[in-house]
Image (cartoon, rainbow, N blue to C red):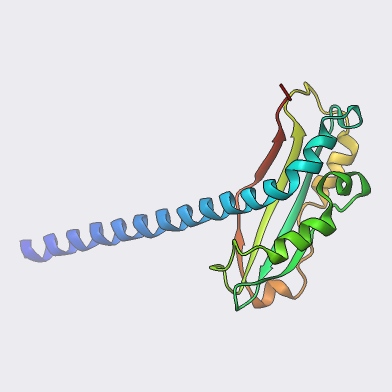
Length: 170
């Protein structure tokens, strides 16, 4: 009887340990996805977008948009969808070139048959306030990209928010 209780007690602890282990591996994979996406995005964004953010035209402005990256069953990015593709935000992000860059990038080969969904926040670190609250509110209202039928055929993986804060030039 004591043996049965001990065995049951041990099984319960082993089960809880395994759940904890599996969840930590899942969180680790998500962090890794965020890091990979951030690296890919920064590699493309930094030259042009960073230079534009340094100008007075972007003083006290912040932007937010969502993105979905579809990876097919061969591990190739075949679809990239952005929300909030306004002219002002396109000047910074250059959506067409970013889409082309993501489609030829191999960073997500291990994410076969997946839809990677994240949001991106852009601002200047040295601004003390945000003055484009009306447009920021509209950006927020339209944050999620329209996924259409892709959401029915692929595993959706939510990635932590990406912060592309532009630090003050030295």
